[in-house]
Image (cartoon, rainbow, N blue to C red; front, side):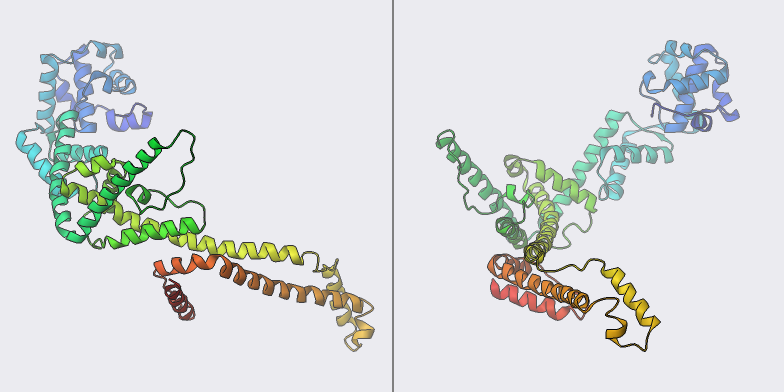
Length: 428
């Protein structure tokens, strides 16, 4: 129960009403205060407070004032004896509740498996759901420890059934590739550790070209560059080769799949390989399915960053060349305004008689040169972009395009997209 309450909440939830009075009849002093607090807390939460300290002081003070009793009396209320047990029984009967039985817990477990665990497996969420379910059935829920054991048991039973179904849906080739990934990752990790032990202290470890490992699949791309692009492409290739069925987790919410994915990501290689087959394949499949989308998104981001970098570098290079060449005509806006005024004032005059007195022929030539220079600037940027692409980025862009299924609903862009994909495949 929360610790802070304002007066409006206390009035709404903890005000003694006429229907509560029969429970408090023939009770005075300490027992009257204790029974009243048990009653109002049960009405609010659907179960009795586990300990005396679970009832906030604000609630004790508010109920005590209604009974015209001193709140300090509650500290003397016997929380373990026959009196409180009798009060609980009386409150249950008054509210038409009953205690939980073994049959009730089994039925609750079955209900969780059937209705809830496919969409949510968070312990705190499930505890709230179970309490509400028991309350709707007018059954006093078990203790917190028993409730958590019930939920964990339901989750275990649900997972055993689900994991077995998932494993049956995975092709044998996919399961083999998943096992090979773990075996290869373990072997490479052991070799790397052995090499580090054999090398003298202070010796720099050279980069080694190794296949994609389990640890690689968990990392995000680094700075944009040929190495990071090739690394992400290799990761997509490994994940795609698994050929995970698209409907593998169709009966489970993405939130639960994410939970399984997180378990796979946090387990060590040793722990993953020790899991039963069904558990291991399900956790790995959940991780790889979600990671495939994320790595593909990172490839798209890398492609966009490469394109932006090509344009930015080209503009920076050309701007530096043209900065001194392009003459900026000072007061251009003022001169153009004066030309417009002169044109309207003397529309019958010739340009030489009406315009040049306001803006000289030399100024006109300078403005024209500036705009021509801007046109040349854009052309030079384009040429620089082509040169940059041909000299460096051509090694990565076709690879990116080839790995991505690029589409466009705009018919004007479809020929460009199709041509780009063909070029990418030809380059690879």
